[in-house]
Amino acid sequence: DRALVWFRRDLRADDQTALYHALRSARQVFCAFVLDRDILDVLPRTDRRVAFILQALQVLDEDLRRLGGALIVRHGRAADEIPRLAAELGAQAVFANHDDEPQALMRDAEVARQLAPLGAALHTFKDHVVFERREVMTAAGGAYGVFTPYKNAWLRKVDEFYLSSYPVERHASALAASALARGVPSLDEIGFAPATLTPHLGQGSHGATVLLDDFLDRIDEYDRRRDFPAVKGPSYLSVHLRFGTVSVRRLVRLAHQRMQAGDHGAEVWLSELIWRDFYHQVMHHHPHAMTSAFRPEYDAIAWETGPQADALFEAWCEGRTGFPLVDAAMRQLNETGYMHNRLRMVTASFLTKDLGLDWRRGEAYFARQLLDFDLAANNGGWQWASSSGCDAQPYFRIFNPTSQSEKFDGEGRFIRRYCPELAALDAKAIHAPWERAPLAMSGVDYPRPIVDHAIARERTLARYAVVKSRA
Ligand code: FAD
Image (cartoon, rainbow, N blue to C red):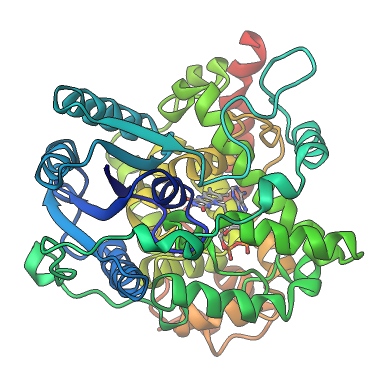
């Protein structure tokens, strides 16, 4: 009896649910990853995520070889390659972890259909989150729509059973090497251009461990530091959570233990990980919200369209809005593939409520640029900012981009890092250069504000009024 483990967003060899279950149930276990053409063919050739994935696969292959196995890497359509590989290897079972994105569910259903005539089955497991699907429900059996009661129910339910790790190493003797495992291809071999990744991200699961150790030294200060983009406050683990180069159970275990010992920083950080589960279950219960407003009355809003709106959108994408914090944030995204959480909220609010543009345009841009792009979290974040989402910010709460800047980047340190043309301005002028230091701005290549916030605010309140009449 042979099994095939199909890796997807779980690129590690430790505490990996599907791998563990395969090792427990089959005598010989093979491992594979498919560089899926259905996903890759539509990406720009410079997409950084592909570079991140190849590095993670390299580390995974090394770790599997150390345990007696190896990683088979195929480049093709997953729905063709996995059944073909199962047939070549004589595997009766394919093991994988749940991926609840609508496209992924369709792909998995196709794989299961193709496996059936071969007499093989697809077995899937929860691995990506602590609680998924219908695991945390209200007393009446419904899905939670508000975060705080969801979080309280989540915390009541969580215990060692859900957080203990799956001991892969103990059962590794079933891992089998295969002549089909010929190493990981290079970017060039799969038609992608070299991409630079921020070095602190590290490579695959080994990089995640380094980041985690660094974060654990300062987790107790997370609550006080996390909102200031110039400060090393958050964990920077999001891309590792996205691709499963770190186990979420491990992170939650560490945070939960520290929280119980009275560490407030760890408590607030755990809350962020629970937001991740929250949005994940929203996607399961409300797949319609992945393409339209979670609250249907928000689909009646008339967003700006036409050439002028397109020009505003382009200025936002390129970090040329004339609002320094917004521009610094967009340039951080474009240059590194990461954006600080506070700035995701500020730039998303700016797009929808200052520029009057459809949140889906911003969502799609983030989806292309973010290394940690995750459909559930990105959609949740955008619909929070546009007020159309599940437990979203009320529509009449409109961030003022200048006061956000003063509050969260008071001295302008973050702005200076990404907008060097403003470096000479003092801490007062830098948040609104054209208004506060027009003389210093002549000759500086930095745009005037593309919108007047006070006017935009009034327009937004009028634009959103349609919601009230329909709610
Ligand atoms: P930390 O502060 O160290 O948080 C730890 C982990 O908790 C994160 O890695 C992430 O997995 C999770 N987390 C934190 N905040 C949230 C949140 N609000 N929702 C869901 N999970 C959260 N996060 C993504 O992982 N992918 C996205 O595509 C994404 N898009 C976003 C879009 C918008 C408009 C907004 C407002 C937020 C978005 N977020 C997204 C959430 C959040 O901004 C990032 O998870 C966070 O900035 C990642 O940095 P970190 O790992 O240093 O976070």
